[in-house]
Each structure stands twice: as structure tokens, then as C-alpha cells.
Image (tube, rainbow, N blue to C red; front, side, top):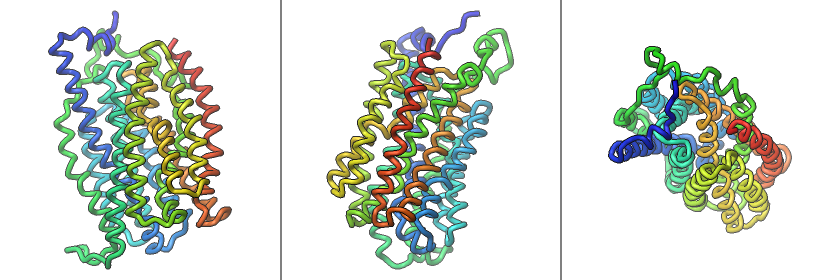
Length: 445
């Protein structure tokens, strides 16, 4: 029996039905974008409080690197795989709501931490809660858009990363600068708390309150979860994406994970590096660096997705990889020069190049996999993608720069440690993407 693709189904609808379906799809994107913004605020705001946390908990750069990267990322990644499998089998709305509550409460728990182990477990909880969001979002968005528009749809959702990080840095930097200059704050029931602890409480609570909003999104019934009929069996491919194209299914996340080494390192360590190297206060750092991420990253998300969709629609089957390779070849040298320049304006200008062309890769990279995944695999494909890029990026980026700062370059030369990590990761990433581009062309054929 001949099956009907999403592209054909949308094109076959009458004009009013197609418009209604498109509006419902974009509403789904908008709601999940809002959730993604708050998830990145909750995970990123800690980077603005490195100094106070280190002083109060008496930890070094390496341990701080663990909190900034692996502690969150490993649990985010390892839980992403089972969460992706759950997304393919159960209600994505209920799973999303549960994730919002868990990561919001875990962020609040970070505010109650008075020791390194307590903050460790709080960050772990944030990772566990957030691990369900992207697989659920990718699954619901992918079923609402044809494949030649999918990179743009997922990239708009992924804008939550740059918007959330920009807000956390710009607004969080000003708040942190103000509150860290003041005395401990006496809160009802909780008693005296350090200013950085209060910041965690303030940013964690909204995620809990937003959870009911997910039930305003329409969740489509999935054929593979319905009772088996001749029609539904025909809609499920006999050979899964993982079995038919393992080099692409597993290799693409590894290639983009190598890029994510630089992305993760830049996001979590740049605020502290600017304080040490350029002697700025947190408010100034947050405003300047936050605007770079917000503007350059936001423009990069939309520009990159539109170029990828345009190229793919015109027959460039590895457009998602080629665009990224060109962007990385341009921006990797730019960010290395930015780090070693010693000039704050040169740093911000060249860093903007990186956030324009390379940082916003998650949207079109995820779309590249979703093109080949069936409805029964979308959550698991997304979970694996996020697990791999997160683990590689977090294990090498933040801790690598922190270790080099502690043991090689010295704490005042954190910029050189970061430049070294970028210089080592970029060439390996480009080579990996060259191989994956071939695999994507084979899969498309």
C-alpha cells in the first residue's frame, strides 16, 4: 500500500486546512521555544556567578568546570536516551510538564546549596529534568512541518538557547552584580541566604509555573501507537534508521559534538574570562557578551536555517553539513584570534562571527537526522543526538579549559587555555564533518 508523506499531506489539504495546520505547528514551536528559553536561563545563569560560588564553597577552576559542564551535561545526556524512548511511546505533553517541574525545582535546590556536593546534586537534577524537553519538542515539531521547512522550524525552537543564554547573561549579570555587593538576604522560612543562592531561586520558580501551558498544545495521535491495521503497518518502515544508516545516525552527533566542545567552553567560561582579562564587572560582562549571543546567535539561527532549507530544496542533499563546515572554517580562526588578542572590542567583534556562523548549529543539525527518522524513532534519534553532542562538548570544553588554566597557563591567562582548546577541536571537527557529508549524500540517494 502506498504511503503518504507529510509534505504530500500538507500540500493535499484545502487552503483553510493547510493554513490551520501551519498555525498549529507554529504555535507548538512558540510554546516549546518559551520553555527552551527558560531551560537555558536555568542552566546558564551559573556562569555569571563563578566568583561568588568559588569563594563561598572554596573550590578551584577544575571543580567549577565540573559544575559548569559535566555535572549537568552527563545527566542531561544519559537521561536523554531513555527520555527519547519514552517520548516515542507516551504523552509528550505530560513528559514535558514533568520535566519543567523537575528542572525548576532542581534549580531552586541549587539556591539552597551550601556545599560543593549539594550544588553538584542540584545541577544534576537540572540536567535530568531538561533532558526530556528537546526530544519531545523535536518529535512534535517534526510531525507538523514538511522536510524542506524543517530546519527553519527546529531552528526557531532552538533560538531558545541563544535567547535564554543572552537573557541569563545580560539581565543575570546586572542582577548578580547588584546583589553580590550587598549583604546576605533574609528570606521568610529559608533564613539568611547568599545573593547567588537567591538568584537560583528567582530563575527556577518560573519553570515550575509554566508547566500547565504545555496542555494548550495539540498532540497528534501517532499511528505506531494505535492498534495495528494494514494501513498503520505500512506507515512503519521495516528497517530502522539506526540499522539502515548507522554511520549517519551515530556519526553525525559525534561530528557536531566536536564543534560543541568550542561552543560549550565559550558559553560557560567567557564571562569569567572577561572579568579576569579585561577587568570588567559582571554587569558589564553580562550586557556586552549577552548582546553578542542574543543578536549574533539569533540572527545566525534564522540565517543558517534559511540557507540550509534553500539549498536542500534545490537538491544539495548534504546542505546541513556543508553550511556548517564553511561556517566553522570561517569562525574557528576568528574565535582563536579573539581570545589571544587581549583587546575587549576585538574579542567581542570576532566572537560575534563565531556566534553568527557556528554556534547556532543544533537546529539544522537535528533537522538533518529528523529527515531520515520515522515517527516511531524521532524521540530516540533526538535523545541520542543531544546525548552525544552534550557529553563530548561538556567533558572536553569546560573541564579542558579549567585544567589548562589551573596547571599550564595560570588563572590570569584563562583566555590562552580557551584558545588552546579551540585550536585543537576545530580541525578534528572539520575532518569529521567531511566524512559525514558523504554519508548524508548516500542516505539521501
